Structures are given as C-alpha cells and as structure tokens.
Image (tube, rainbow, N blue to C red; front, side, top):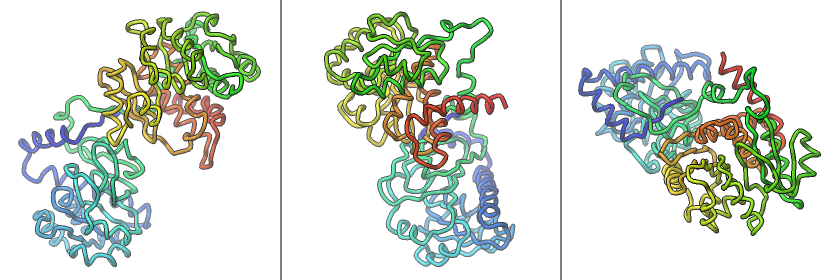
Length: 482
C-alpha cells in the first residue's frame, strides 16, 4: 500500500533529516528531481527541452527555493528561464543566486503577464506545505495569464495540503513533484494535483507509520478472493442481499447482480423483488423474506427497502445474525432516525456503513466538511464500525483510526444506482471473509475501475458499471501478477 503522511509529521521528519545533512543538500536533491520532471514535461508538451521557455512562480520559503534551483539546472540545458518573484525581499537567496549565475532572468511578479503567456511550462513554487488558504491577490491575478501546463512544487498553491480543499483562487497542475513522502492533498484532490511524482530525498527512515493508506493494483489483486481447488460455493462465501421493493426493484437487481459479478460463491436475495431478481439473475437463490433466507456469511441491507417499520425489522434481523453487515442507503437513514436499532447487533459483529455526504449528515448530525478524513474517523469510532464515505475520493475508516483512501478515476460513477452496485460488491467481499476495512477499500477500488472501463469517456448508467466488474477484476489480476 502507498503511504501518505500529514504535513506536520513530514515537517518534523524533515527537521530531523536536516539536522544530520549538509546545508543545502536536501534542496539540491529535490530541485534536481524537479528539473528532471520539468524537462520531461517540456519534451512531452513542447517537443524538446533546449530553446523552450519556463516561467517560475516564486514565493518566499523553500518551495520557491526549489523552483529557483530547478530553474538553474534547466538553464544549463538551454532552457530560457524567467523567475517571477512574488516576495522579492524574501526569495531564497542561494536559489536566486544560482539562477542568476546560470543566466536566468528575474522579474517582479507584477511584470510577468507576458512571460506567463509565452511560457511553454510554468513551475509553481508560490507556497509550500506550511501554507493554507487561497492564493493572495498578487498571485491570483497571474492565473488568467497562464496557458501552459503547470508543474507544482510539492502541491498546487492555494490547495490545503492536509484536506485538499480549495477556498478561493488556486493553481491547477498538470503534474506535481513532491519530496520525501506523499501528502493528503495528492489523493484527496487529484484533479488539482495532476499526476504526482515522488522524489526520494532520504526521508523514509524518519517518517514512521503513515497516517493514510492508498491501495494500489497489486493490493487489490492480492486481496480479491480467488477460489482454490478445494473450494465450493459455500466456502467461497454466501452473501445475503436485502434490497429493493415490489414497486422499486432496481436496487435489488443492481445489488444482487454486483454480488454475482463479484463472484460470490452464492447470492441469496430476500425481499419483495424476488421475482424480478430471479428474472435478471437466475443463479440467485431468491425468497420473499429475510426470515427464511437461510444462512449467509454476510448481509447487504438497505438499498430501496424503505425507512418504515418493515425496513427496520429487516435491518434488525440482519444485525442479529452474528455475521458482517454492509448497511447502505435506507439502512443508514433508519440508523440515523432510530439509533437504538443497533442494539440488535451482536457484540463484535462487523458493521460497514456506506454513506454519501447527505447520508453522513443524517447519520452524524453534521456534514463531512472540508476534513473528510477526520470526519470519517470520528464517525467510525462513534459507531464502532467501518465507515466508507463516498465522494470524489472515497475514504474508508475503521474504529481504530486506520484510513484507506481511493481517488476516483472520474465522475462517471456519480449516477443513480452506482451505490447499489458498490454495496453488492462489498457484501461479496465480506462474505469471503475479508477484513471489513479492506473489503470496503478493495470494493471501492474495483468499482472505480469498472466505472472507468464502462464509461470510456461518455456517461454510463449503473448497469454499465455492473457489467464491467468482470473486466475490472481481470485487469487488476493481470496487472497485479505482472
């Protein structure tokens, strides 16, 4: 898994490393890596390196110093480099001197409009990880003059480093080069960061355990259940689906179908949409009530069951069975309206809650806010559950404080029924006895990949995501084994 550290811990680690490193060595290493990536971008977007023009947006502090030193390295490769100083009296002295020695130009930022308009690449070194809030007016006024791709130093200026939020003018980067360790902004707001490249400056020994984790393809492939020669339909996991209604059977069809597509050993459906589910999925064992559904290794409860007495009885029955429960949609609203329903849960029974932002607010009494990671952690601890907070970046937190994050590959999954598909997949993984925290993360990962495969750049309904699950699973297994 890919580790991610909050900025306070990264700053502390940097200070420890600086204390045992010759002065300037870390910045030199970081800036050289930055220059290498800048040269790659020039080749990609402008065809060559020598003779191209790079504009540096330079603020006070070390990020500005990194940009200045990188500019000096680029000058030695024949690049025309102009530094636009936003705080001339506080620009990094050694970096500024290095750029001037290499033949780079230095101008006040207010004189930089034409430089930005003619640049082939812009390097954003305005602020670093100690900054917060939007760009100040002097920097914000420059944004309208930028037409070239932007390479951000550590993070796009104006984006909060720990939450990824944007409260005003901010840089949007095509690529971000970060140093030593990835920060939360890189996964919580990938649309602003672009591709993120990590330059090793020797920080790993000082960091300790990460604050957040991000699954990669190998993790998802390794966790995905694969039947062995001795397995049968029961040992692979039987998942129960309590979803939908006679009037609105779609949630039942999608959730049950997702469990089938996710290769659960057996899927049992229990509810008033049994006939419709059988028509769509003849392999599903369907019955009209959870009370005669038979044994399962996990339950998915909630999509389309309603929030009245019958829905509550269904949820209470599932919670009382002593198996993991994925509670989604109407089940979350039932818990929000009647928290005592959780008294039916056997002690120690895993519970996975999958709210979107509106359901989260109903469940906890407040919206997730800008710090979605902290909000998810607090809710997971409050309900002694795994909480999967849906959104542009899915956050999966458990009651012990572990957090997985999964940035979306696009906005195509934001469609009616998409959550029902995710719940069905999650239930299949729970029935296969995955750690509920990992089950939520892997389901979100494969769901996002299936949506990308199904969409191919155009809108796609939830049923399209459902159909693309096998392709997504084949993809992670092939890449994971490669």
